[in-house]
Length: 442
Image (cartoon, rainbow, N blue to C red; front, side):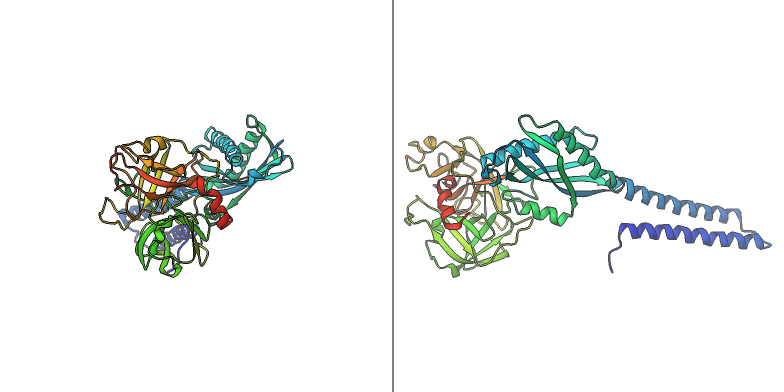
């Protein structure tokens, strides 16, 4: 059977009421013309039935038109003026882009949350910035939830709130209220917009925790996580950085460098493989020496493009100059062993860890000077939570103030898993940002 829309359902309910009323009018006429009238209890039953049907119909109308909420998506733009041209505004990971986007997103959120439609407001984001002569156009994305009866006025109210916000200017930022444009878009197009940007999560959990001492990830929570399989079995992790490229650890290819021996899959289940892709080329850092820890980074080129969706899309690569300070909260994910030499999970695991100062990591009781500047330590000196065997090559990620996720590290080496004074050691992505760009153009 085909699906019946809510509008068709309301029509059917109304038709039913008309038919019942018509039938009972005919019965009433028959009763009047008959010599013997119906008993009072039967008349009362008919009247009760009519009232019940009318009540149900009215209830359905009230529910569908006034109570039930639907999600509405909007795409728009406006201009920020008096800004000298700078191509960095267009780079989605640049300092200029993030600084201006943060200002605009904060003002939009404040404007909607202090308005009379704050209950309907769900989210607003700057998707991209387009620099021009003396101005920057901000492309925005909005989500609201409202009843059907509110839909007509919703777009008008959103425009009024945004226009007022733009008139008030944004601190040191000057905006043009007359440049505002807003269009309602479908859910499919709204998801495409988000999924084509790096580091965004269409689906996310309220908390993130994990690997050795962690917990199971939700669908779409870490959409850039990939499983690198050798001869069909999970061997290492990897991170999706474009629709064809991934980054991983060089030591993942110590057994064989033949691309035909490897496949890549995504999602939260390591088996059966989800969105399986074949490997066309493996690029290992020229200075990597098997058995040693330095320059433990490699790039994978897939034979075909990955089609991004809510559950699979790319992580952001940081700028080479970006700094991640000790104490920052980061997350490591993977299908590695749950403890040293332990069993491997079927579902993706996640764990919150903290960046550890290199000097602390190089202490005599820790790694005694083995951690180089191109590496980054993360975990806890007291142990317990850590990456483990099978997590190699996987991502260590960091959320910025806009909740956009950046690839900070690549799981590389360590002593056992979760051991006291032996946190995980990762390749520092900022140290290899230019190398990655030289191999991928990203």
